[in-house]
Length: 265
View 1 (cartoon, one colour):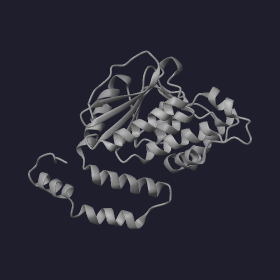
View 2 (cartoon, one colour; view 1 turned 180 degrees about the vertical axis):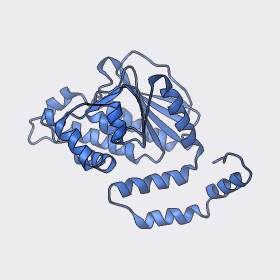
View 3 (cartoon, rainbow, N blue to C red; view 1 turned 90 degrees about the vertical axis):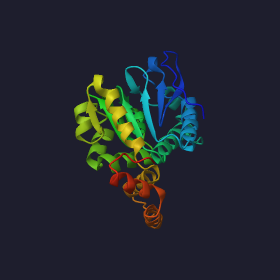
View 4 (cartoon, rainbow, N blue to C red; view 1 turned 60 degrees about the vertical axis):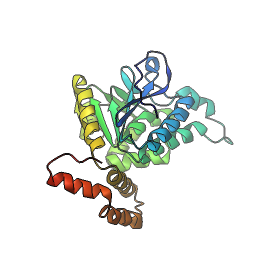
């Protein structure tokens, strides 16, 4: 795969992939509409996820937005067009759910770089990442109750498993906006940082993650997600743990530790 790093653009487009060493960055790119997601964005994201996961040279994914917001969520106009069709599957909602679930299940570690506000369905998109680093002026709200929308079940489950039932109730049932400090308090943000320090902190964490053992991380991430959703495959987790004890990664890790050098995985 050719490695490249496209420059930021003010022209709206489907998400842009930027590659630099072991790091891939997906940037939502509809800044004039606060990176509101459309159907073609969902298809593009699925394709990028497949491409990234298939490349063994990529060790970490960063998801971010262009401009002053991370994302305003899914296009409400598209939802409205599909509402009211009793015999019609709600294809917009199901497509969005599939994309978010796929992001959560990616084998490599993921960081959401919250460059600004995050709203609606994109709160779940960010929550599906392993880490969320946000600026201290960001904010979020989940307006489903104001819109008359019963949110999809895997999104509610993710809120409950990651933030707890009480915080999920507050965010879903009140539809009230919360600020960055509250986002940090309830565990939505992993780290809150001044805007000027955002890139440095994202770079630091991405460097840490890309330097760790990819196979071990992949297996542990899978087990963590399965534990969180109450569906641990115990036999598979035990098998991965046993395999790690005789794998190349642990040999290199122990050797590097004894030689007082960074491991080379």
